[in-house]
Image (cartoon, rainbow, N blue to C red):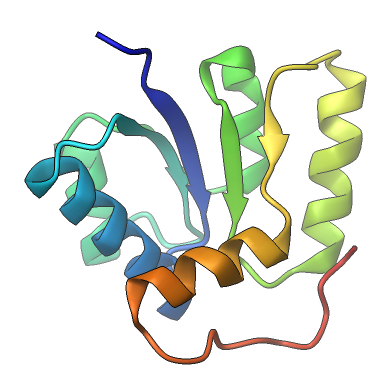
Length: 129
């Protein structure tokens, strides 16, 4: 069995919730080797956050807390639209000497969104890159 790709989804708003739905569909129906190992959302009582918590996936209120998982996360998808958070995440990875986890560039989120068939990805115009 191949090693699964472990992802964290930050932000479960309009975009993040759709990403989560599509990832879960592919994981459950197509049995792709991806595992959602953490999510972060400012409202842990939202239905989607509670769904993850019910499935024993850690739900963090503060997205920076995902860094505490270290190399247990392969890819962080920052779907918050907050360029300052992306900068803090990069610094946090450096400060913790985490050379394993990567933050998916926004262009990768756009690529996946196109595969999801959801039309244009909502964009704040601030990429943080």
